[in-house]
Image (cartoon, rainbow, N blue to C red; front, top):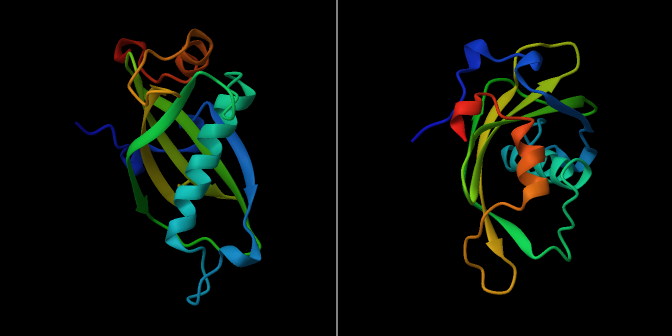
Length: 152
C-alpha cells in the first residue's frame, strides 16, 4: 500500500491545511542545512497542531492516543536557516482506527516542495494501547482534509 504523493504534481494548493514554521539555528547540521531528522519533527508538529487546534484533541488527557506506525520522507531541496517553512497537510486515507497523512514542506517563495512525507497514525485506547475507532470529533476534522472521500 502506498499513498505517497508524486512530487511532480504537488503544490501548496494540494494541501488544505498549511502552517508556517521558522527554521531554528539548532536545526542546522554540520553540512549547513536542516538535518534530515528534523523534517520528521516538522511533519509530526503540523499533524498534532491540526489534531489539537481543529480536532479538539488533548494529547495529555483524551481517552485515545495516536501512535505513528509508519512514516517516510523524500527530500527534493535543502532547507536552511533562517528560513520560513510552510508545512502542508492532507489526509490520503481515513480508516476505522487509522489515518494516512500526506505532508509537504515548502520554503518561502517556492511552489515546489522541499520534501514530501507520509505518516500513518493508529488511534489506540490510552489504558490498553489497543486500536480503537477514531473519535467522532477527530474523524470529522480529518474528513475535512480527505483528498478523495471514497478513501474513507
